[in-house]
Image (cartoon, rainbow, N blue to C red; front, side):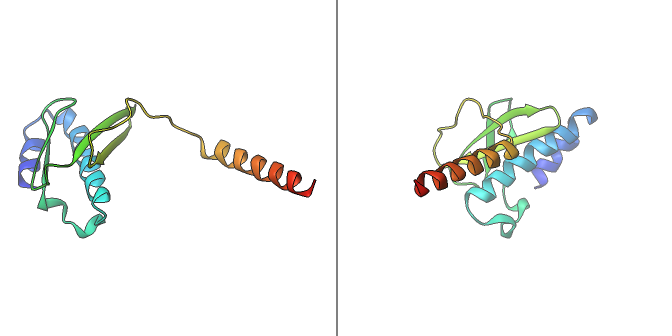
Length: 115
């Protein structure tokens, strides 16, 4: 949105890309939460980070809440929900390990079914 462009343009150039990705992931989390995806124009609403934890917005109903998690300096994760109930931290799981556990469980179930 115009407001977001203004905000990005008026911060230190070293922080611009970081702030851009903050806004992008926050906006992405909102359009996923409402189930509209990119059918909702990203310039139809605005998000502003007031501080590390305070996020304000325009043209979004008041019953939406946002949270950002620090995962890695080069990776952003933002969540949006209709209730202000977010876990304090997230757990990152390795998909390979998850698939191995599923395979082991299914193999065990198959052996038990044959007994």
